[in-house]
Structure formats: C-alpha cells, structure tokens
Length: 441
Image 1 (cartoon, rainbow, N blue to C red):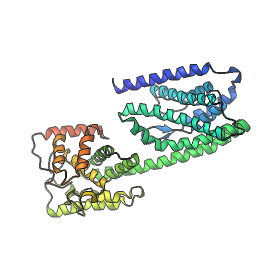
Image 2: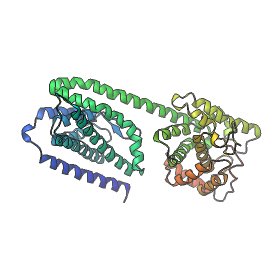
Image 3: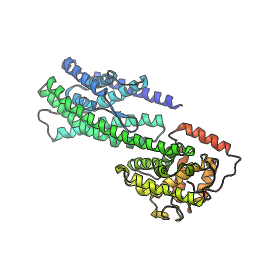
Image 4: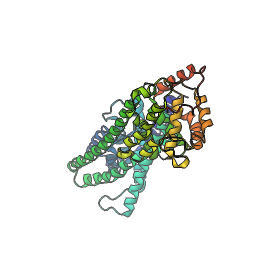
C-alpha cells in the first residue's frame, strides 16, 4: 500500500470515528439548553483563531483556538462543542489547504474536543462561580485528554507521511506544542468565566491580549526560523566557494543526524548537532580558492593552509550564542581517533563525541562525491574504507552506528542522491586511493 493510500485510509477511519462520536453525543443532547448566539460567537472566535496558526519545526502548526475550545467545553454541551470545533476549522481562512487536510483536521478536532467534553460532562462539570480543588483536577484531566488525543492523532499521520517512527515525531513537536497548551488552558478557563459574568463584550476585549500572546509566540518562531535561514545561507556561501562540494554541508548534517539518532541522542541535542554540522566547514571562507579547487594533490604548504579551516571554523561558531558549545566540535572534526589528526592531535575520548560523528559523516560524503583530485567511490566501497580505518582514523563506535543507520538516512536534497548514484556508477572502473592517503577533507 502506498503512503498516500495509508494516509487516506487513516483519515477515513478518523472521519468515521468522528461521525460516530457526534451521533453518540446527539443522543445525549438537550435541545432545550441550546442557545444560538453564544455558540455563534464562539464559532466566530474559533474560526478567527484557526485562521492564524503558528508553524512548528516539523511543519505542523498550533493556534490559540484551544482557549476558545476549552472555554466552550465549560459552557456548552458535548455535541455543541464537537460541532463548533469542527466548523471552526472548516470556516477558517487557511492557505494551501487540501481536501485531505480539511478532512483530517476536522475529524481529529471533533474527536479531541468531543471526547474531552464528554469526560467533563460525565464528571458533572465544574462550578465556574466557585472553583474548588476537585474542579481544578477535573479541568487538568479534561485538557490533558484533549492534548494527548490531539498529539497522538497528529503524530500518527505525520509518521505515516514521512516514514519516521511515531515517537520521533511526537518528541520533536511536544517541546514546542506543550507550552502552547499549558498557557491556553488557563486562558480558556478565564474566557469561560468572563463570558459567564460579563458577556460577549468582555469576551471580545479579552481576546486582544490573547492574540498578542499569539503574536509573541509567532515572533519567537520567526526569529528562530531567521536564525536557521542565516545558517543555511552561510552554508550555501561556504559550499559555493568550492565547486566540488556543493550540497556537502547539508549531506554531512543528514549523515551526522542519522548516526546520532542511532546513538540515542535527544531531540534537542540532535537539533544542535545538525546546526553545527551545517557549519563544520565554515572556516573554508578563510581558505584561498585555488587551494580548495586544486585538481591535484596539495603540496605541504597548501595542505598546512587547508588544515587551518577547522580552527577558523571553530572561531566562527563560538561567536554564535546558541552554538557556542560547537566551537570544539568544529575545531576537532578532523582529529583522528589515533591522535594523528589536526589541529591539536588529540585522540580517542578526548575528541568531542559530536566531532567524531561529523568526522565519519564528512569522510563518507567526501568519498562518495566527485572531488577535483579523484572520482567518487561507490557507497559500498566507502563503507569498507570506513571499516578499514575504524580504530585509527575513526571512532569504531561511530562507524558501526553509521553502517546501521545508513539504509534509513534520507538526504535533505533528493536530487543529490541521483547525482551521487551517477557519480558512483561512473567511478566503478576507476581505482580509488585509500582514505588515509589524501587528507584534503
């Protein structure tokens, strides 16, 4: 079954489950308690909130709509909550939304809100005019049900789409979405209390600071994205200086991330490693182009000049506050496990672990892409070379982790995979020197 088919089947199951839940809630609905105007107000506010989401790192998004949804759970019947939540998304103004996306989000929102509201009703609701300890406990459980159901349903569909293990997707987004829910649940409680005591006008005034909070969160995410874009631009500038290593930094980052995942790195540590990997050759900015692009072997003076790039790169990275810890990693990514590397000749465990990871990733990419002084190796040959040099040039543990991780590593630039395959095929008849002979990289 194709990925698209799996996604469609999953969404169809969610749609059926959402309809079943609404039918079940309809059987519990008391028409005499239905009030059109309050629900219309919350529908409008929910649609407005859903129209202004903030994008998270993995392409997912969050909005301040949970505040209105949580408030509606405290004010309306479960059926009304499920319906206004689903319609709130359907009526929102979203860019580039497909029918599949509408179907998925509407279904999962109905399930999240409907199940949470049903639990709240079964617990007898809460007294907004006199909240006690039991009420707060119920509210915490109610918001947790919504959050967990939402997180699980979204994680599964993203896992299917990207072929990543569910726990990786879940953990990569939980750190970003959790603060949003923790902040919006109390705000949702305040929304309900204000609506009960002041009415619509008090509710509308309350949403001014709510959307200001959304703006502040978006500003933070935009600033983070600007930081990543700056790193990417610098990486492009570095690779552009060497015509033979275009895309090299991105591939090294992909390989390093694959090794680190195999070693069990936390997501935060993975993220930092990726940034540092992208900048591992930043020092090449200070190396003369005729040395970088020399078609033959470097003479001793040129090789000595080339060696300076790792120390120069470390000096560049240490001035980036978020990546200050990357100075030693970049500086030492050309150290050898046996102590014969540069710039400081340190060995073994004295070399930062991340530097040992990048060393393997860097060498593999260097071997499997064309260089001015030789053609690319087949990946199998490069793997054999890594294994041969494990314990001398490379940390054996990193080599073993790379070999295990390699089949599942997906390069950020798919076109590079084709280019590498073509280069490798062209080099089948070319004898390649051992990795230890030329240490240009």
